[in-house]
View 1 (cartoon, rainbow, N blue to C red):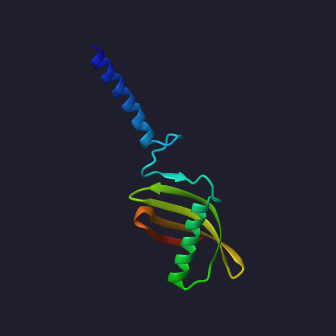
View 2 (cartoon, rainbow, N blue to C red):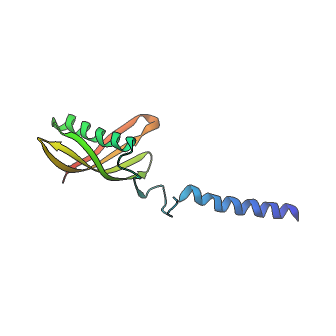
View 3 (cartoon, rainbow, N blue to C red):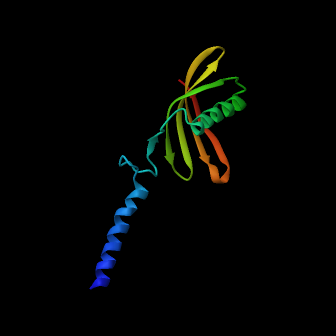
Length: 118
């Protein structure tokens, strides 16, 4: 009888503990859903925004200057998608851009997927 109770309690513990893996604190699924970034001033977020501008400048032969991250969200996929709204300076004028960057840190992969001035 004690064996069954122990098995039952362990099963209940594992069942409820598995929700921690699938859901963030606010109840959103973490894998696949877009989650707002905690702070646009986070150095990691700023690095992704700067990367997007640098890559855009290489491809388009532009000379945009990264200013700041306004807002953003991340999505866990086979790596991390970063969807950011950033501001750039273009000939002394500030412009807003929407960018999407895909990153796989363990494989040292970072790609600019889209860059749109809005």
